[in-house]
Length: 260
Image (cartoon, rainbow, N blue to C red):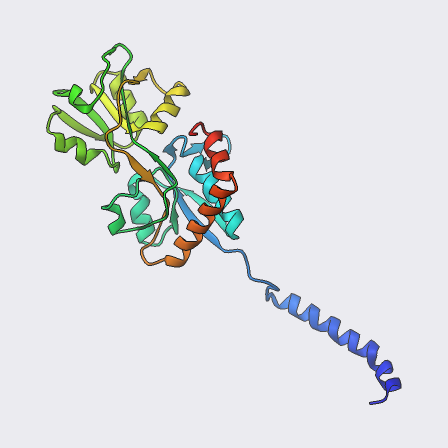
């Protein structure tokens, strides 16, 4: 084809090219891969790790900030859903959620049914009693013969029962429920995740006191989890966790919630 004839055809070629672009746009075919969204299960009663913020009617807290920071680094969008503690693992294994991001210990027993990420944060149990109980308890043995309360699904239940020293070990749905019964004298003491108990009491949650002299005996490691076999998602979470640990975002989040 001559150079003159090619020049004559350029306007027509340009129109065809523009028409092709419009056709692709109208077809709904994305120009690039869409950002994936993962459904995240977090509890509404685990301040400061996860909790329901009534002003925004959304789940907020340490683990929410962490999963959002990881999402920014790894290119996915977390859709955080309020999920009761006892329903977290069943919701994950049934496919209702993709990720658990809550104050959940990575225990050997749980690892049989879910796949955990690397450790996010480590802590143990805290002891709280009524304000008028001024005893300087240092260990569970100091509570021999008393009735205690422990939150359902936590790693403290079986070790406390196994001690065989308590009058009764009662199981509760939430830490506020345990605090209520301690305050009313229905039970003598309560055990819960130390940072959660400390944070709730700092906000005036109940008229009970955290026993400063008590030393945690069941220290665990909090991690996120995915459905067994979802190695790709677990690798993504671990990569993001490593990144925010190295760039300082993880420390900033912990400091924001008083966990540093």
